Length: 313
Image 1 (tube, rainbow, N blue to C red):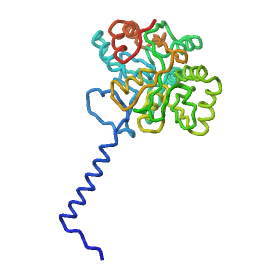
Image 2 (image 1 turned 60 degrees about the vertical axis):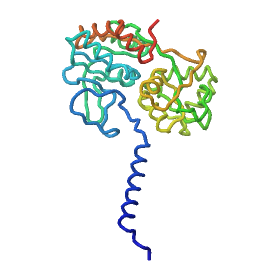
Image 3 (image 1 turned 135 degrees about the vertical axis):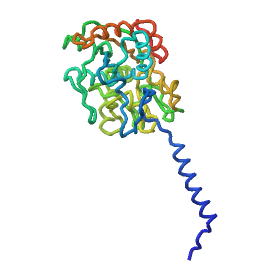
C-alpha cells in the first residue's frame, strides 16, 4: 500500500502543481486582436468569443461613416482623434476596417451582418487600393471625387529568428513552408503578391503556392488578411506571410511581437497606392468633404508616416 503524503508534503505538491500551471499560463503569450486600444466606457471583450476588432467608434447616429481598407486599422484611432480635434463639430464617427472587397459588397447590398449584429449604415467615405477604387467607379459610378493619399510596399512576415530561413518569395513555394496568403476573392493585396510570385519564379511558382499548396493545406487562404496572417505567424500556424510592409512594421516595431521582416527586392515587389473617395450618396456630404481633405493634409500624413506608410507620389 502506498503511503499517504503528510500534510506539509501534500501542500508542497499542490503548490508545485499550481505554480507549474501558472507558469505555463504565463509563458503562453496572448496575441489575439484587437490590437488597438479600446475607447472609454464599460469594457466587455472575451477574445476569441466576443471581440469585434474591425468596427470602431460610434455606431449610433454617426456624423461620419468611413469604410477603410482593413490594413490601415492601426492608423484609425490616431487619425479619428486628430480629425475630431481639427473638426470638433464631428464627435460621433464610425469606421470599419474590413477587407476592401467585403466593404464594396456591403456598399452594394446596403447591409453587413457580423454574428448577430446587423448594420445598415451607408458610408460617407471609402478607401481602398487605387485600382479597386477606379474599378468600382467604372462599374458603379459611386464616387463624387477621389485622391491618392499613401503608398505601401510588400514584405514577408516570419517568426523571430526566421526558423525556416526564408530569403524571398521563391522560398514560399517550398513544400515545408506553410504560407498564410490573402484570398484573391476579396483581398486586393493578393494580386500584387501573385505578380511578385511570377516575377520571382514564373507561373510555376504562382501555381505551386496558389494551387498545389492550397490543395495540400500548406497554403492557408485568409478571410481577413490583416488580422489572420500576423496571428497565424505569431501562433506558429504559418511559417511565412506576404503582407503590406506596414503590417510587419506594426507587429514588430509598435507591438514588439516576436516577428521579423524579410525584404522583397524592388524587382519583385509591388507598391500599393491608397485612394480615398467621397460617395455621391454620402449621408453626411459636408463631413465627407472635410474628412476627404483632412486625409490628404499635413496632420494625417504625419500619422501615416508614424505607422510606416509612405506619402503619395
